[in-house]
Every structure is written in structure tokens, then in C-alpha cells.
Amino acid sequence: MRRFRGHWEDWRRRRERSDYFHERPGRSHSGSGSRTREDVVTPPLPEQAASGSQMAMSVDFKTYVDQACRAAEEFVNIYYETMDKRRRALIRLYLDKATLIWNGNVVTGLEALNNFFEMLPSSEFQVNMLDCQPVHEQATQAQTTVLVVTSGTVKFDGNKQHFFNQTFLLTAQSTPNNTVWKIASDCFRFQDWASS
Image (cartoon, rainbow, N blue to C red; front, side):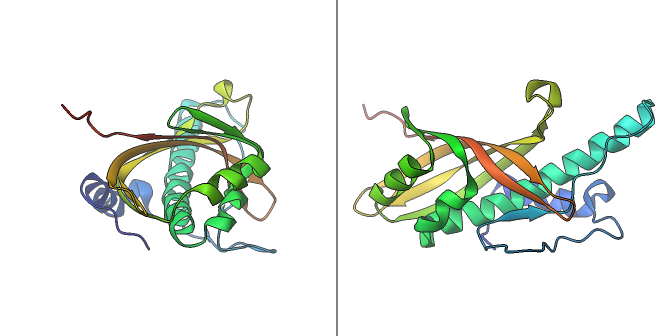
């Protein structure tokens, strides 16, 4: 598992101490079927609360936040390990019509993404910060979506180390047995200060 520094470790310690984020009995993270190590698989998403009560909605939202946090953590570990060590498999994490914006350059579709990633020099990413939250269903036409934001440093072979910020929109592809998360949108930016 990739180690995160700074704020990420503080968040993780708070998460592990909090009952709000602990594993609920009877929930398993094991997937089924033909899963590759690039798949981000979580348990099936909970059904919407039948009653419209405030308490049921609150429990439902907490469950979705918990699911978002688990998916984001697993996703970040898989994404950057795959980017650094198995880049040819990286496009398995993207939807067929996903869009990548890399320092202002737009890349759309799996074939174009594959060509783009093959062109990049080998890399070594260090993620220092991770944040995530579920996106409200009204904003995504009822498609379960998670916003994931990372920042850290990256060194591409033959280049100097850069600070980066990356934002992903992950969307859930659900089956009765599990949920597979795929990238719908990815925005990567170097965050280096301009030289004076």
C-alpha cells in the first residue's frame, strides 16, 4: 500500500479512530468475477432509504460518504501504482468516453488515452494529500459519482521533480455483487511556482 504523508496520515488516523468510518458487520470488500488488480471494487452500494425521514436520509448519506472514502483510498493506491509500474493497464481504470485534461491538453477516449500514456516517460509519484466526497445525485443525473482530489510530487524520467494536483470524477458501475469504480473525468496540473 502506498504511503501518504502529512495531512493524509492525519486524516487516516482520525478515520480509523472514528466509529463513523469503521467497517460495518457483514460487509466484505472481496469482489467476484474476472477482476484485475487495476479494478477498484467495493461492496454493492446501499439501496435508497424507503422512508423519507431525516434520520434515514442521514444514515444513507453517511453510508455513501463511507463508500466514497473507501473507494477513493483504494482508487488512489491502484491508480498511482499502475501509473508508475504497469502503465499499459492504466486505461482499464477509465470509462470508454473518459476525458483527461493534462496541463490544459484534452485527451478523450480509450485509444487516445492509451497513446497519451504510452508517450509519457516513466514516472515516480508521491501522493501527499487525498480528499474525496460523493457528488450529489442531482448534479450527475442519479449516477453515483465520487470527486477525488490528490496532490503531491512527481518525477518523470529525464525531468525535474514537479508538484502536481489531480482531480478525478469516479463513477460507479454496479452489479448485484459489487461496485466497480471508473474514471469519467481526470484533470492533471503541475503546480510549480514560476521562476523569477
